[in-house]
Amino acid sequence: MVDFVFLDSGTGGIPYLMHLLEIKPDAKCVYVGDTANFPYGEKNHEQIVNAVLNCIKVIIEKFSPKVIVLACNTMSVNSLDVLREVFPNQIFVGTVPAIKLAAKVSKKRKIGLLATKATVEHPYNKDLKNHFAQDCQMFLRGDPKLISFIEHESFTATSSEREEACKEAVKYFAQKDCDVIILGCTHFLNIKKEMQKVCGSDIQVVDSVEGVVNRALDVF
Image (cartoon, rainbow, N blue to C red; front, side, top):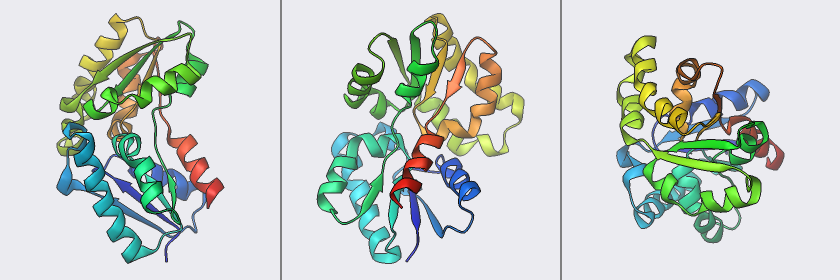
């Protein structure tokens, strides 16, 4: 039996695992990246749910984890409800866009959500906005090109190349006058430093790492 299994659609969720281990270094953790089904963000709802269900069945049989963290926004918004219904005795923690945090820090009340196509198109984001950011305008951008760069090229790319890859997305939100960009796909965490550098001091980049890890530790 292990304490935590982190399931991701590739390698983007590794910062969640690392942050948890910083807080609880004795935790027994397993990281599962379903690269066989990458990219999740270009799949439809049914395809995403089926792929996640198959992964979860193997994870439970092999590891018997106390907590499964879906370290992927696309997996979470599409399949979390189904997983809790199919596996009622398993504890799941999902990852959703940090819209609440963005609304808390935004002064202009204009926030941007950068995510996969599947996450951007999911109605769950509208529910989060209506609940936590009613007085904000939210601009959405699905960016499969940037996600592909992160998964396949970013780990060997220079800092300048990673910054260059961020510029198109940052420009989009800057033109919308946003002062916050939400990283709504765990892959973007791997270039958060470069994205913040491109944004400068006018736009703050936020993510859900701290919130998700704290929740995982709370339910452990």
